[in-house]
Image (cartoon, rainbow, N blue to C red; front, side, top):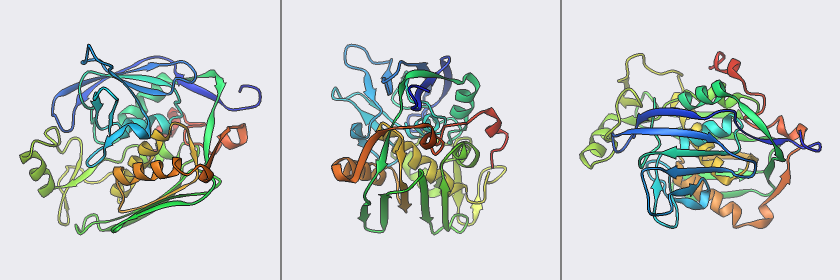
Length: 312
């Protein structure tokens, strides 16, 4: 610790991974590099030259969030599907990193954050000589968009409360609430995969989307059936994945959040709109230095490879 406060971290070593872009269907190489204190999380499109190819992982750089979270810089350089990797970094307590990608998408891997989490915990994190600052929610902020509801309100911890409701019998109505402190993300959410309806996959692929989507990187459902061999990893895997997405999108706040997030039928766009409303309301939050006691309430503090053996 640094003068009684909790300190920032980065990776001990770089991480190299290869996967497939969900929408392009093309191979994608990913390299996660350690970074210095106060650097934050940045992406670099290494396949782009001659223009600014750096994109800060911030809520105000989100340009499109219909099917995934897509970041873009002022030069128009974009990167899609950042949410699962952002959730893994947040859930493992990594504050600073430079992520290099050689294409327009972060690889989808198996549709969850599991592969990212395992590599992060394998290489480990190291402390840096700078204090962690947290965003403490002071007033309730909410948005209601048709049947979608999202809110942030004061809480002693980062809590996520999520509800989904789908007509498919195999999904149906699912609701889950978790206190995200101390490894809960790794144990409860990290291996929960993205999901879609079979008819939607066909429609997207006919329109040039989800070209890399398959049963190896998404749960595909049809009525009361799960089409994946082996079925679900959790009976409520779908709502767990929505919570994973929410954590990844909240990570774009730029600092850990202490507050209760509630989402009902919500997606990436709603969570991003909520962050924009929060930061447009100065009285609704404060940014403070994190002490050791408060740090115990953060998702990544105390996480180790042992948490992977306890994945729910």
